[in-house]
Length: 280
Length: 323
Image (cartoon, rainbow over all chains, first blue to last red; front, side):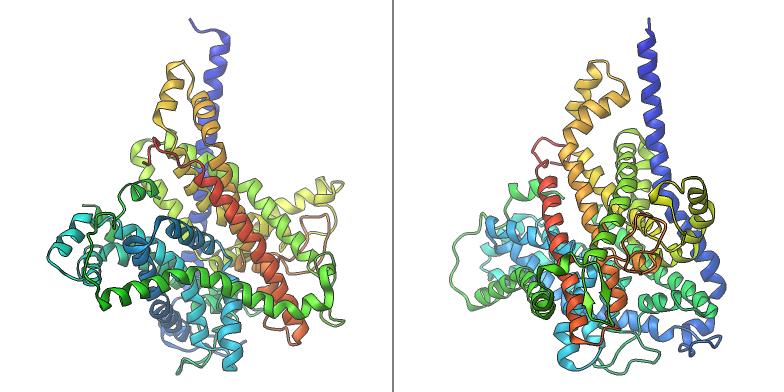
């Protein structure tokens, strides 16, 4: 027989379950809302001109963000070239060589670096590349983004390399293959999918970064012809167009945001496809 | 996240002795250098911020931290308004995000039907992938105006006696920024909390059920009390992210250096001050002052992050579901 107190306990339990469900709904709601607005406001502004033309001067209608779209891809490429080799090699050290004590410190350091606000990397890029080179540049922007990538790539590389069975390495050693060749030809090759997944994850994280770029890459209304020139990027363009007083620029900010989110989700979708295959 | 399995099988434990080869040494040296880049990045950040802010430090001394003025005309710079704005927005964000995230984490680990868990986890990950500038755009054009029309004006008319909601109302205000930051830290707090709750041994839950506890009692007695430290770590990690949130805050907070009781008026934070003023800062002293704001920001976030990581690691014990 249930006492009144038991009924109360059951009732309370149901209430709490209801609250947890409500929390989950509230967490998902903003994502749904952002999507709806991006599609509603962005899709109507998206046209052929937007992806093929340069921006028009403020106040004029039309034009596009072609240079910013290309610029974002270029900056991601630069960050990839500068950041991935260091992150990758660091991850190799942790999994193949390091001592537990040093590894612990490096891992901890990388995790702390991941929490450093991204705007700080913009300041670092400004001091290291903009000030000495005498101007804002694509190189400075790529470097600021590379700093963000290094700890991310390092952590994921280490994790996937440790999944490669020790017996693979031992088999190589038994054949008299030098250790570094085993690492490059056997360990890295076995873990390649995981490494690529990690790199794509890191790229997805930096693709939308604005704060490190506004005083390194600066943004530009023109095509970029050199690493020493300022370069346009989607996030910067969205930011400036969003806070602009001109309605046509606000409209284009939404279109830019739609393009950017599609780019980010394409990256994370490929991560999902790759890691799903890895698990099989 | 599977550190425990990593420790159990060190990849280099069984390597036999081998003849000396230059290739090996060069390769190992290169990888070591890359790994040490992590330390180098810390030094780099410290060097850049310290050297560039030395002018402001010399000019203002410790008074910089307690000076409420930020006046480019008279070159009178102080950090207190920005520290105030950062603390208040982060506090609002935590008050909103932590209960929601922990509720969602409980739902994901103990309540949701199995078929729903994976998709819902993916949705939380997607939330994390949305760039800051897009939250800012949405906050600026959709959320803040909506809040202003439907919430702020109402609060202001009915609770104007409460200092938090008194005075003039603006859509771009500290409360809007706090809410946007809350949305942005939801995914990280949720996913870390979920990991923590998953690490609570099932035996704990079964024991509580065995004593006749209801579902909520199991969660409260067996799960939450066991995971308390880790959940605190998740919240502190969220705090670290909230302190450094830049673009979205810059776009919705109104960027005005004031200290006032009302949450419905514009403010400014450390990160958003750097983002919005750096380009216009022409004099050496104003740039230097902004670098000192950066130094304060980095110092605080690094300390907060170290605290969070230590709290989270303290719960990673063997015997948990993750191991």
